[in-house]
Structure formats: structure tokens, C-alpha cells
Amino acid sequence: MLKKKNIFILSLGIMLGVFMGICASVFAEQEPVGPVPDTEVLPYEELRAFTEIFGRIKRDYVEPISDKKLLEDAIRGMLSGLDPHSAYLVADEYEQLKEGTTGRFGGLGIEVTMENGLVKVVSPIDDTPAQRAGIKTGDLIVRLDDQPVKGMALGDAVKLMRGEPGSKILLTVIREGEGAPLKITITRDIIKVKSVKSRMLEKGYGYVRISSFQSGTGESLKEALTSLRKENTGNLKGLVLDLRNNPGGVLNAAVEVSDAFIKSGLIVYTEGRIENSEMRFNAAPGDLIDGAPMVVLINAGSASASEIVAGALQDQKRAVIMGEKSFGKGSVQTILPTSNGSAVKLTTARYYTPSGRSIQAEGIEPDITLARVKLEAMEKSEFNPVKEADLSHHLQNGKDKEALDKKLDSDKDSLEADYPLYQALTLLKGISIMSK
Image (cartoon, rainbow, N blue to C red; front, side):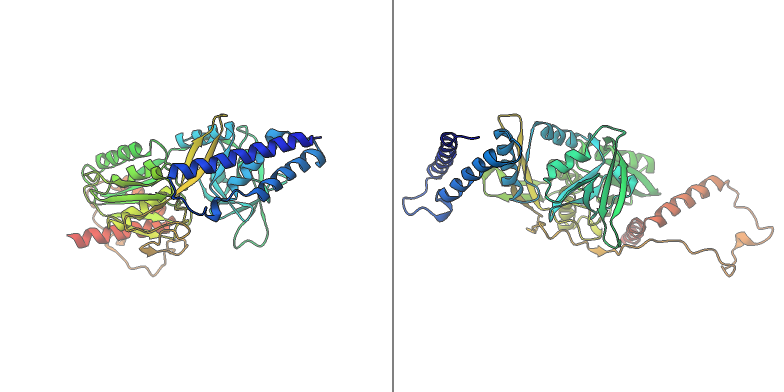
């Protein structure tokens, strides 16, 4: 049982610390002499309530609770009450966060946030157990194995989803359009995220997929574009940049990707309350695809750094944005290490596109909106028009085209299965024709 003397000392220490902090803030900002604003009045009643509740828990809770846990939980609550992205990270959570920015970590492979006390999927990451199991953007996770998520801190939920590779976890998911919750079992694995993938769609037209923004994404993009030009034996006629289901990542990586295609001007800027939260990022001269037309694909799972890139390319008239309205995460989080080896992830600024748009809770509106549909080829009909190749004893072309035809048919099937990508390529072809 906590003695009254100890409660008094704790209360006095907390109040004194807060009081000194407020005084330091007032003196540092050199406020003019006058009435102190209500926001700077020391909240004695709230501090008294805090210490009273602290003592009640220590004395009356059904099980003994350490001071360390109570104070850590108080810090977590203080940060989680600010916004969905601010959080207190104990030492192992801090290490996991650093691992995530390098592209290798253990778990399921999903980017999540909190919404109304439930874990919401921002995006499944490409080629991970979560994506293969069928987890989708917008899914609400209500149970992890037999534990309800409601009331659980996001960090605790993430910790439960991580685990030994090969172990399984049962997710109970609510999905829009489904009449009942879905039960999805996922086997954990080491997540190795290759953030940039590329291929030729057809002669002259390249495709680059960025699944997340990591510390090496900018360099990987340069290598991918060099490889595409080499495969094309010359400059590209057009490029599709696919940012669908990209949950974001490192701000500097988003700036590097945007800079790869913008010759000059503003890419993004941030504004916050503290001086070092106000930053401006401008493009350096040069365009890695020499001004070739671009289409950027986005959807509801495109968030944060993805929105920075899409917003910059849209405002600078460098690309056509196609798809669905993006997620709408327009805030910047700063990682502030603490003296005990933990860290605070704190929202310190909002970011704005070159034209001054805030994406926070709004998202990027595509230039061309696409509905969620699946494109399928029509079955061949007996009434299809007859061509030269269908006539008996027709002359051969003179070249062995069988292997090439098979490849073209395979590429066409792949495109037809992805309606937005098919539309993006069609638009690029139209731009190329008109530019001639």
C-alpha cells in the first residue's frame, strides 16, 4: 500500500516539474509582462486528480502494479490521445521501427493505424503473408487470436501481430460489403520489402512499382530507370509510376523520388509550431526520363509519402494522377529518443503540396478517377471478322513470330487483369501519339 507521504512527494515532484517546464517555456519565448494566458495556468486540479488516481490504483487494484508500468501507461495514454500517429515506443518497439525503415523485419506485412478503437489496415505490403492471405486496404481488425482489439493501444496490437517466423495468428476482420466478420489465418514470416520493382509493359513504355518509401528507395529508383532504358535500347515514350497500396515511409525518400522527375521548383514543405519543423524541399535540375509522359496510379491505400509524390507531380504538371482518392495522411512524425532508450513518435508538422494544399484528412484527388472494376477479354465468337491469317493456304509472314506472339499475349493478359494499369498505358499511348 502506498503511504500518504509517498503520494505527496510524487505529487509535489510532478507539479514542480511541470511548473519549472512552464516557467522555462515562458522565459525562453520572452513573453511580455502581463496576464498569463489560460493555456499556461498550472492545472492544479488535474494534477491532484492524477496523483489521487495513481494512489488509488496502487492501493486498490486487484493485482500489484509497478510504478514503472503505471507511468509508462500514462505516457502512452497522453500521446495516443493526441492523434492516431503519435506514440510512446519502449526500447524494443523503437528498434522495430528502425528495422521497418531499412526494409527487413518480422511479422505479417501490413501498415496499420487506429480508428475508433480498432486496428485499420492502411495497406498490405507487396509479397508479404498479409497480402497473400487476402488482407485488404480498409479492413478493420477486431480480434487478434482470441484477444479483442477494442481498447488496445496500437503498439500493443502491433506487438501481438509480430512473432516468430512460421508461427500463425488468426485475424478477425470486418470488411465493407461482407455480411459477417472474416476469419483469416496468417503465417508470420521475415518481411523483406523490396521497395522498387520495374518492368517493360511493351516497347517504349516502362512500369515502376514503389511499395514503400525506405532509406534506399531513391537509389533503387535510379537503378530501375537505368535498367528500363537499357532494356528499351533508348529513352522511354512513357512511364507508369504505381503507388497503389503504398503506406508511405521516409520523407526524404519521397523527396528523392519526386526530384527524379521534376527539373525545378518546390516539391513539398512542412509547417509546425517549432522552428525546425518548418522545412522546404526543392528539386534539383534534371529529369531521369527526359520529360517523357507519366501516369501515377494511386488508391485509398496510398498514404503519407505516396501522397507527397503524387501531390508534387500533380502540382508541377509533371504527371497525370489516375485512380482513387488517396488516404489523407498529411502529418509529419518526428522520432525523439529519450534517455531511457525509448522514444517518442510525435506529430510535429503538417506537410503541404507545392500549391499549398494540405493533404491531412483530405487526400489527393486524382485527375482521372477510376472505378473499382475488373477488365476481362470477351470470349471469341464464331461471328468474329475473318482476317487474312484465317484463310486457307495464306502466305506466312516470313519471320518466326510464335515466341514473340506468346509473350505479347501473356503481357496483354496481365494488363487486362489490372484495369487501372491498362488504362494508364492506354493514356500514355494517346499522349505519345498526340505529341507527334
